[in-house]
Amino acid sequence: MAAGDGITIIPETTGMLMTFDMGSLMEKADFEYVKTLDFYKDMLKEVSSDNQKLVSILEDPSKSGIDTEQNMYVSLKFDPEGSEQVFGGVVFSLADRSAFEAMLAETDAQLDIQNGDGYQYAIGDSKTIVGWSDQFVVVGFSNTYMELAQEMEAYFKTTPETSIANQSDIKSNLETGHDISMWLTTNPFADNPSAQFALSMAEIDPEALRDNYIRSYVDFENGKITGTSDLDLQKALTKDLGKFFDDKVDTDYTAYVPQDDLLFAITVAIDMTGIDEVLTARPQSKQFLDYSLQQYGLSFTDIANTFGGDILIAGTKGEVQGTTAGIVAININDDDKLMDFINMAIENRALEADGDNVYKLTPFLTRSSMKEMDMDVNFPDGSARLIIENDIIFVTGDPTTMAMIQDGGYSRGDRASGEIKSLLSDHVYGTYFAMKAMREFDPEMENMPFSIMEGFMDSETGEFTFEMEDDSQNALRLLMETANEEYLKEKQEAMSDGEAM
Image 1: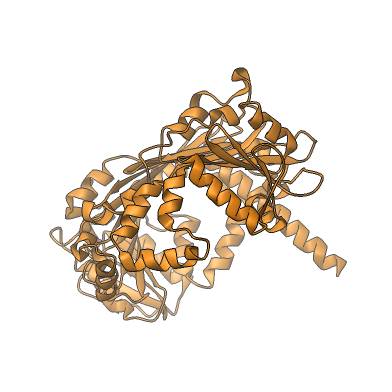
Image 2: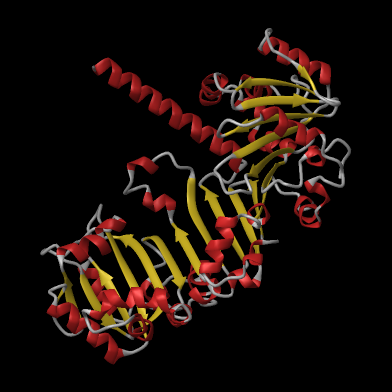
């Protein structure tokens, strides 16, 4: 770890830590260019009323004495008693103390500077404070009223033995070399009475709150943004949660997902039997759930035995220009039990038979299944259809999509393949968004620079990628350009509305 690294003064009581590689981020964003953008200049003006010290640093870090070759850290300390009190510190390494103090004097000539043990500090208002020594600067903030000087003192009293940097988990996290890293632990809540009681009620050992970690990383590359997350959780905490999900989606839905004309596709592997097992181990919870189903002569076990839990939600371009189509699907484990559900729905006028293994949905169910997901209902009567085919239930609002389902899916040459197929089949949760295609249907996405967003989650890890339309520049600079364009557009619209009034 380099000398003067700000992490050495961050207390071990920190519950969340974000690390920013300032040198890398400033280079990738082209910081000199960013400073000329209207949205950045106006943002600093707007923030200045709340924290002028931090604004002055952000305006020109190097001239304010900040060492831009060192990492910047944002640490959050949560109240272990369970209140919503949070104290945060933005920690910089200091290259030139005199330059920093000159910047402070320029910012506020009436600044009331107090002396601490080996450091100085100044309280900006009831929720902000800045402290500095020869090596470090901490800009502190809180979400409520608290003893700011006491919170600031904790940073400058931290020793190598009491620093969060002393934790082995943090050391490995910092050696990854990513643009942005995030580390989160549940340890601050391990002794919280409310949290312990909640776990006890869920029949989970309260000690399971200790030593759980989530590590996430984000990198800006030419033409894309990539991110990963790693979950290191106690088995006592996940033993039941893990039963809610299968290891991966076993149903091959790609026959019903096109390679072209795809807007988005999402799959998730829910373990219905596992959920039933967890509920059965908690009779009170299961009885409460079963009570609402008793009037139909059913129980949650019936649901778990009927439906497999492999779920697909997909949207495509409609056959008619400017319309969308889509499907929601879930696999079936027991055809006979399924018919009990279908007949019950027909008796309660939620469904209406409309051909062989085809049923009309009521307007309410149509809205909840299709329109709530912004999928058009293209049937002339305005009702979506439920189709049973190949041991799968499909719901769609589009006649052409229904015909495709009844025909066994898209032709092999038109089906999703490659990366899309892997995302939808090999994970607990997989998602693919064709952002470029979606812009045709959502004016608010007009200036979005992404062409594709894809990602997945498994039991211990997850990844995401945002691909940019322009792969010749770094994604961070492209985001800055897009933010400025959007800001100027909104500013112009606001001025036009003002003139119209």
